[in-house]
Image (cartoon, rainbow, N blue to C red; front, top):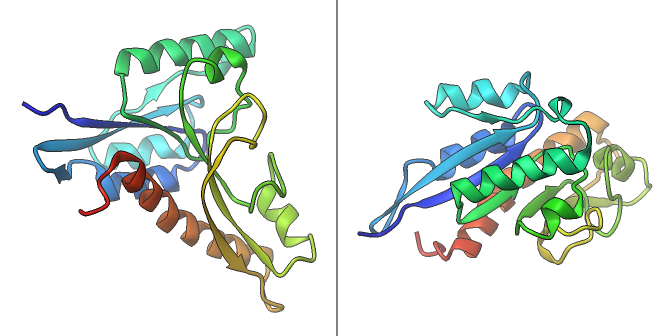
Length: 194
């Protein structure tokens, strides 16, 4: 019997990308395998917990404030992921800078709302919007010890028009995320023909 496909999704906030992945993948069949999304958050108040619950999915909560330092939190995260043994670990709005405790042991991909290597770190959409460039975009990359610097797996450009506001530009970035992340996951898991 074929083992099911498990995707761990790490998030910290509203979980709109988490919900998009749930809609795309959770409970769907690929051949003899069923795909399952396992949400994990570092914030017990994260809005994505309720989004997952609406789809009948419980979220694993590991509150980073319960740990004395980044390394001990990352150790618990590694322990949790090893027990789950997911086929893919996806960071979608996971607002933590990870230490080598995590990056040396877990292979993961990250969704970032800019055309890396430009505008690494937090507040990337605003930085991109205020840069004077006529394009922004979305990058999916491998997670490494250096922030937002791993191998780029996929990118998509978003035009910045003269009439765009930060709000309208953010909306375009989000819509691009909702398309590009599932496409990249399908490719990585070899379920492109579905």
